[in-house]
Length: 267
Image 1 (cartoon, rainbow, N blue to C red):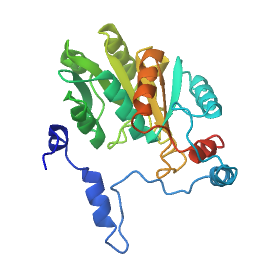
Image 2 (image 1 turned 120 degrees about the horizontal axis):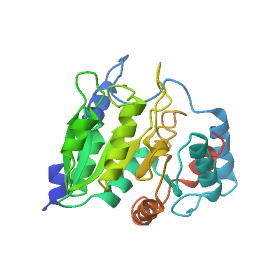
Image 3 (image 1 turned 90 degrees about the horizontal axis):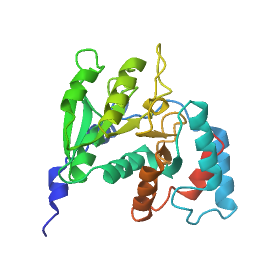
C-alpha cells in the first residue's frame, strides 16, 4: 500500500537500533539511551499503586489533573521561570512533538543545535518544516551570532538544549540569554528542552524562560526521577502556544496516564 510522504522522509531512531542490539548481549555497557542508574522514588510507586486501586484510571483533562498542574507551575516559579500556562504531556517527547507541531509547518524552518537529539530533526520534518542546524563545535556551545545569521522570515522556532543531549555541555547564561533575546526580537519562538537540567558538574544550567516570554520550556520526570517508561512530561510558556498544544493533545496523546500523574504529585 502507499505510505505517506512524511514517514518516507523520516528515519528510524539510531538510539533505538543500538538499544535493541544491546538487549541481545549478556553484560553490555549500554550508553545508547538516557536511562538513569537509580530507581523510581518509592513515593511515586506507592502513589501510582494507590491511584490505580482508588479507581483513578480514566481520562483526565487534556492539560493534566489540576493538582499536578499547580505543582508544576509552582516548580517553574521557584526556578524563576515566569509563564502564563502549563500542561502535562506524555513525556518530554510528547511536549516536543506538540510544541513543534503548534509552531512550525510547511515552508517553515526550525533551527536545531548540531549535534542534536535525534527527535529534533525528525519532528521538524514530520511537521512539514525544514530542520536547519546551527554549529556548536568545537566546544559544543553555540555562537549566538551564527544563530542570528541563520534566522530568516521562514524561521518558526529555535530549539535550545542545555544541558545538551548528546554532548552534556551546559551553555553559559550569556549565550542562552543572547539566543532568547535575538529570537524574541525577530518574533521567533524558543523551544527549551531542559530534561537533563539536573545533570551538571560545574556551571548550573540557565533557562531562557527566565528572560523572555517567547519560550516554551519543556521538562519531564524521565531523568530526574528515572521514570523513563512512565511517560510524564510537562511544559510551560505563553498561553497562546500552550493552549494550541493542549488542543493538539486532545486529538493525539489525549492525556498522560492518570495514575502516573498522581504519582508525579509525590515526586
